[in-house]
Length: 112
Length: 113
Image (cartoon, rainbow over all chains, first blue to last red; front, side, top):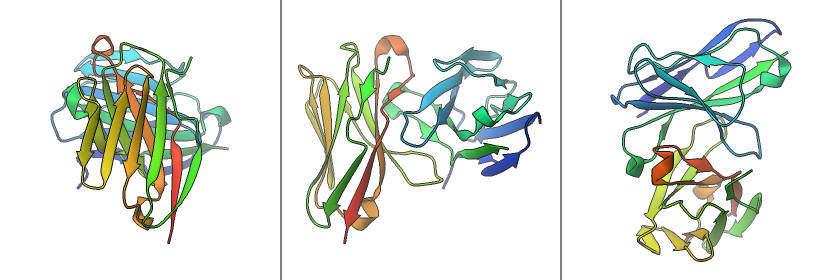
């Protein structure tokens, strides 16, 4: 049973549109992450948060933004989607390093 | 610069045989390692972990080996089953990266019935 939820699972959208990818977790984890992954490539960290009102950019430069107003909610927004944003976006949360991450099912985004 | 590397993009194994997936890392500060399994269109799920104070950890059919001097870890699956067919990612972290894990590019395992 998933404790971290991502919506939508799949999204096809036109260039220039604004989109928000949703991520919610019910485990009360303070730490949440957004990763981007293309087939055959490693997971790239694009944003993370260690608690409410705390957000940081990850190693991979991204034109997206995130917010963390509530512990359980960590949405990612693209103000103007481009074909280069086509990818799979994975949200994860964690509490302790020893537990690793719990991932959501991902959002497969296609920008046409 | 990629700190965690999985040099074999794919691996095919007969059902019942052993699958060995390899992972190398460059950062000698890494002290905690995870393996994740990922099916298409799903998020990765945690499989097994190992701390640098150990050189082996076993969980059922899955065993992870860590060679710190070689900066190498491997995942052994014995016996392999068709349901094990998935992409396997290794991940590593150190105390000074906090909870952040660095992931490899994954190895796609196909277990042939």
